[in-house]
Amino acid sequence: MNTLGSAFSTAAERLLCLTDKDFLLFVLRHGESQGQKNQDLYKELGDERIPLTPTGYKQSRNAGITISSLLDPASPQQPVIVTSTGERSLATGASILHVMIRRGFTAAFIPDRRLDKQRFGKFDGLFTNKERQKCWPEEYGLYNAQERNDGAFFARPPDGESIADVQDRLEDFLKSLPYDGCPRIIVTHGTNTLCIDNVLMNYGEEWVLSNQDLRANCAIRMISGNFNDGFSVLDIEDNPQNLDKNFQPSLTIG
Image 1 (cartoon, rainbow, N blue to C red):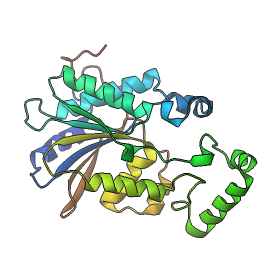
Image 2: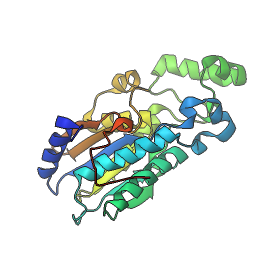
Image 3: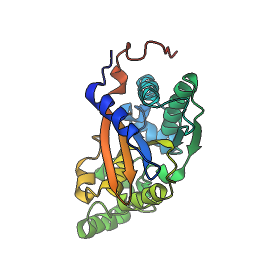
């Protein structure tokens, strides 16, 4: 029983059409984090130390099952898992790696700071305008003025990064990837997944802004192609938590 249906079949067909001029990405937002359940943890632990929830681990393992089911463990081109350096991304990538090793892959695991979440500087852990204005009134005023003049995509929090800054480092990461036929599993953060789409498909700044916080945890987006001929995008799985237990009956993950 294949509950992924036509998207999974289409992905398998596209894999057969790849050439050595293409690269292949599976782009994911990390699994559900405890910070999504309790925002106070951002203040208590710091953004980089937010762990996954049990649901997040389940999503991560099931994402590993889905991706490994598309790939051939006997292929000479073994997967590379590249994650941001935040705890929730590292844990997601490690769970995927565990699944792939269990399935016979020799996958590599590489943390890369270019995939890290947007840095909010003095606004880190402050999620409302009221909090930001109370803690940093002068900086808040300057940020608001920049947002009005340059737009939300380019407004840079004090001592932090704008979304445009994040997209620039993601573009640097993407353009550094070799065309070697190696599948790369990219585990990063929600807005970052949108910026990756925008770099490769040029959807525009407003598209990134309007889709923030809409990318589901561990939703799998397969991107293939190259910068000369363009890219194709396919959403393979948008709810790995509910992957049917019969999808891969030969694999049991504890």
